[in-house]
Amino acid sequence: MDMQLKDKIALITGGSIGIGLAVARGLAKEGVHPVLCARNKKRVEEAARQIAEEFKVQAVGLAADVSRAEDIDRLLEQVGQRFDGIDILINNAGAGSNETILEAADEKWQYYWDLHVMAAVRLSRGVQPLMLKKGGGVILNNASICAKQPLYYEPIYNTTKAALMMFSKCLANEFIKSNIRVNCINPGLVLTPDWISTAKKLTQETEMTWEGYLDQIAKSSTPVGRFASPEELADFVVFLCSPRSSYCIGSTYYVDGGWLNSVA
Image (cartoon, rainbow, N blue to C red; front, side, top):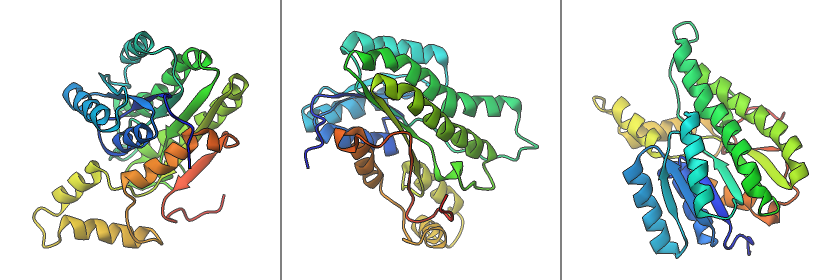
């Protein structure tokens, strides 16, 4: 199926590793020119170089911490200087947390609020004029199943991702007037480097392997009994970025192997 994405320009935050990198590669495979954004300058530039070489597209790697308003301003300025407009924004940057509500300091709440919510607010607001130059565009916000089905050990993550889901709906209603489609994705278990790193640490001095630990989590959590690969999630993202999904507006899509224990 032709996704009708050739020569589109996409900005992907958290684009140097895991889900963001898989999305950048998936879009590049369709002929999209991806702008990867991440905090680690060396890694994001190398990721962009490899994508450009493999898929013969104009891939760019830019260093920015999207939890900081000034970094977002600089990022958008750089994108505007390089490209005549933006077609796609993937708000993907994020990180898990671990705390109790009683013990978490205000500063920790504020950091995750800026990273998960305000980054999406600021970037969406900032790309709107760049998308108008192209006659419209697509914004996808990567939230989490935790926005609906919270995990006990990360109340800040749960709360900020739930806010991101609601922001997506509000933004969709406002931006569709400018022919900008907005949707949200709530992934479940996706086998990212963070999951692997955590599993290795937790099983380091035990008889269980890290693979066995993750297999146990998958089988106890999801009907499908396994983690998704980042590429599986990226395939769905590519579809939502495509004109093929032109009637998909203001929705939240669960890509979770059946983990969500709810129908509403």
